Length: 402
Image (cartoon, rainbow, N blue to C red; front, side):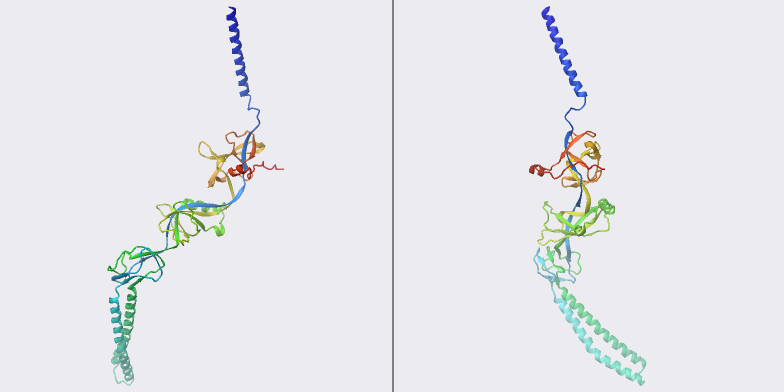
C-alpha cells in the first residue's frame, strides 16, 4: 500500500508540472508579439525619372520600289540579256524582241512622209496662183476654195506621216525592254523564242529595289488611341529628333545593326484586324533584309519625364489579381497601397498611379511585414550592388514637415 501511494503521488506531481508548463506557454502566446523589436525590411525610395517609352511591333519587310517588266509591243523574244537573281541598273537591256517588223514599219512611214512632202510645194504654188487670179476675177470662188482645201489636206498629210514615223520609231525602241529602276531582278517567266504581247497580265520578270527597304507594322487602334490620350494629357511628350527612330530585331532574335526611321501612319483602319499600318524605312546596304521577312521593331512612342519605376519583386497581387505594394509610412509603420501598372521595363514596373515620389516601397521582407506593424528599414541593394558591397538605392525616411 505504501508503494502504491508513492506512485500515485509521483504521477499527480508530473501531471501538475506539465499543466503548469502548458499554461505558461499559452500565456506567452496570447500576451502579444515577442519582445524582439520591429521586423527588418529593405525598401527603395520612389523617384521620378525621365525615360523613353517604347513599344514592340511585329511586321514584314517589303521592297522600296517594285517594277514588273511587261512588253509594250507584240513580238518574239530573241534574247534574254540578264542573269536571274542579279542586280540590274536603270536602263539596262533585259530582253530583245525581234526588231525586223518594226524597222520595216518605220521605213514605210518615212517613205510615205517623203511622198507627202514632195507633193506639198506644187499644191501650195497652185493655191497661190488661184488666189491671185481670184483677185482679178479670172477664176471662180469655188476653184479658190478647192485649191485652199487641197493645200490644207496636203499639209495635214505631212503632219500625219511625221507622227507615224515617230510612232514607228518609239515602237522600234520598245523592242529593247530595259529596267525602269535599279535593283535585284528575280526569275524570268519567259525564255528565248517566246511570243509576248503588249501589256500582257503576266510580267516577264520583276525588279525590286532593296536598299533602302520598307517595314510595314500593323498597330491596333486601341493602342493608337491610348498613345494619343497619353500625349494629349501630358503623360508623354514628343521625343524630339529621336521620336522617329526605329530599331529592328531580326527573325532569329539578333538586333539589326542599323536604325530606321518612322515614315508615316496610314489613315485607314483594316476592318478585319482593327489595326492601322505603320511604315518604317531601313537602310539595307548588305542585302540582309529581303521582302516578306518577319521582323520585330522597337518604336519610340514618346518620353515620360515623370516616370515612376519600382522593382517587380516589390509588387504582389490580391485574390482578384490587382497589383499592390507595401510602403513604409508615418511612424515607420507598414501601409498597403493599390497600384495601376502600365508595363514592364526591364526588371521593373512602370507605375501609372498609386505612388508618389519620396515614398518608400518595401522590396525585401514582404512576407514578414504586416499592414499597421512597425518595421525597421534598411537600404535595398540590387544583385550587382550586393556583390560589390555598394548600395545605390537608399530608403531614407521622408523629411519631416515643419
